[in-house]
Image 1 (cartoon, rainbow, N blue to C red):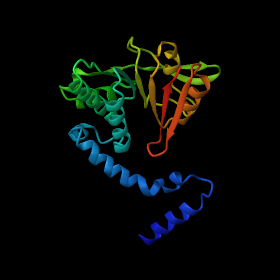
Image 2: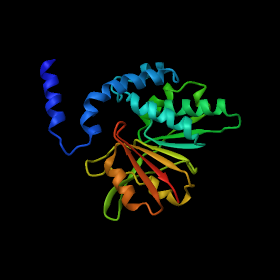
Image 3: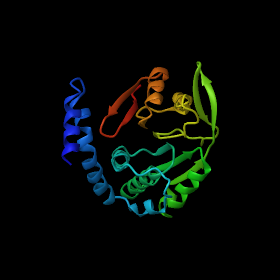
Length: 233
């Protein structure tokens, strides 16, 4: 125990140029996970987690709480998710709760997965009530080049104009191919107020920052390791 405290103390003091948030993150994140698990469990029935296979990526409760809270506050009508999983259930629950609270609200989620196995896993975890506000699509990716940059593009997407995108997929096919180009493809159709949440995926974030033509703001949130991208004009 003492050795671990010493290690963290040395790590904290050895980054004089890092922000305070960066230096304190190893201490704070475990507590945030517990707190966000508690908050989320009051809004979402988490028993669906037991239906996921042992080799599934463990839930990040801070990410899931951020998604739930954001969807409840911003009330998007059409959500497009790349990479199905725990987030699919949480986003669907937030949309369902919005629809119940605001009569006439028609929030709906299209979740896209490039692997049929994981799409089927996610579908099996969605309760009957939440299936009224979401559907899971399987859409394999195509390896392409964009201005000499190795990219991925989904082969089949619903004909929609999303108000929100959650980017946590597709699966990386090779170490050098870590960029999904789908947001760039639909840029011209997006309406003012559109926003995207990019979970990690720094290469994809930088690509969009460099190649999106309209005016978007990019806000990185260190506690959630995500970037919120908002269309402003």
